[in-house]
Amino acid sequence: MTNDSVFDWACGALESATSLDRLEARGTLRLALKASGLEARDVTAEQLHAVILRVLPPELEARGVADAGTVCETMARDLNHQGFQAAGGDSPENIFARLGGG
Image (cartoon, rainbow, N blue to C red):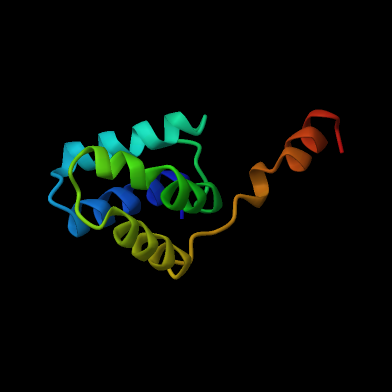
């Protein structure tokens, strides 16, 4: 699965679990990623997991989402069961190995 799939999955999960519409869910998640120094197109499942648990709850609370902590815990748990591949091909070690010729 691609990193975009991770973001898209999270947006769908957020939309399903809250009263946020599609654009609100996507925007809220993008703001949480931005606050973490990440972008939707580059985020890995591991990074997204941390953002969901640490950064997303206050974003949801600010938007009036009830039980934001529970929503985020459920999303993080469900994310672990989605089987998204680790971004091993894009690790810093692999990138530097390619740049250095091996």
